[in-house]
Amino acid sequence: MSGVEMQEPADVLLTHSYHLPYDQKQMRKMQPYSPIGTLYAATALRAKHISVAVFDPMLEDPIAGIQRAIEAHRPRIVTIYEDDFNFLSKMCLTRMREVAFEIAAMSRLSGATVIAHGSDATDNARLFLENGIDYILQGEAEQTLAELCSALLRSEPVGDIPGLVRLDVQRRLVHTSQRFSRNPEWANLAAPSRNLINLEPYRKAWKEAHGYFSVNMVAGRGCPFHCNWCAKPISGNKYHLRPAVEVAEEMRQLKKVARAEHIWFGDDIFALNQHWMQEFAAEVKARNASLPFKVQSRADLMSESTVAALKSAGCTEVWMGVESGSQKILDAMDKRLKLSSVVTARQRLQHAGIRACYFLQFGYPGESWHELQETIAFVRKTRPDDIGISISYPLPGTVFYQRVQAELGAKRNWTDSDDLCIMFKAAYTTDFYRAVRDALHAEVSGWYSTSAISSLSTAEELWQRVHLLEPLSRNAEFTELAPHATESGLFPVSGLIAARSA
Image (cartoon, rainbow, N blue to C red):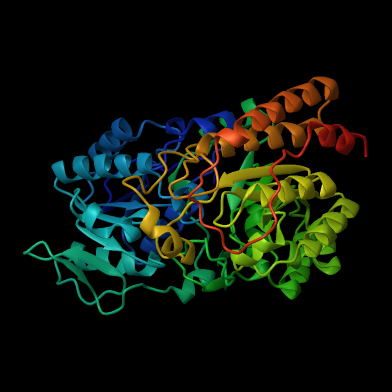
């Protein structure tokens, strides 16, 4: 599991378009994970007796690397299969798109047919098909990829494969009768084919940056909730959950064979099923498979029994999609979450010794300085162990996108994960939101810093910058969702000092 198979000819070469050095924010974090969605696709191809190789550009130059892989494996088909479990792929970053087009061009020069699958290819099918892609597979595509590759390799007609998109001879976009494929058998698919890539560069990167080796895996796919800013071009609202016994066994294998020291569960939502959580904890214990792991979930799923099961299985960190400290904004997002649930979850996780971390986003329509200050106050009140802050990002297929579509300009996608550009008429400019992000990050980090005095000083300076920017950064044309009383003053730096001493 820690090595890679010898290079030999393969009918299908799988790859993806995310290259860590092209994303400086993620380079600073240095937490690379293998393309598990791509490796699940490899498993599906192997199950149909199709020979397959994988080129993983995460830590290797994508263009030089794909050329070497094509020369080594001489594939008849190259498939750019994005990792559906990597949130960076779901963000449809333009840097990834550029890499995908370069891979397609080099593949076609070799005479290979090119297939693409991923969120960006789904949202922008014509653009991809006009840039060297022969076929696009939309939806949950492991089985349809195997079906398409089988037909192409046998020189058979490509039938009415669910989710298939291509251009006809008149360059018109053609969909098959079922626009998106669904793969209900994914939960029973064998483990991802990690032996097709080399895990040693990942181990080296993790060890040098953090002192331990973290490996990713998944227990489930999709999310049944309906937050209106969340794009779901792959699974829609479908949710698949693997058997607890198989997830625990894969965890044991990663611990014993790959010598993993930490697990990141890449599920959109973990611990949705309380009974499954109890079974999973028991199976992990029975196999001596426990490793420290982190997950992302919802605050209202953190019942006492679920938190206890998480603790028993080895969970050390839960990232919750809190999004805002304003109930008005949560309701506008269709989040179906009460702030009281976050308070309760924070307390339960803290009592269990599990780090409680918040995902937050700034700039959602209707969020003025009043609501933004509510979020700042809520973070100070509940004191999460860490936070991750993004800017509201309209992606096609969402209610949020429909609300602001008329306001969008030429730029529709972020370049990389640190872009955070406001692309609609929010209450403030991009620079202001970045300033609030930096200040709040510094403050939360300061709570747990060994050099508390210098951290406090840094946070105070950053909040002062926010104070200076606030009146200069307002957008008079931003659209309110509902009228309310506004406050013009900054949440004072004195509040920061008081919060630290509480």
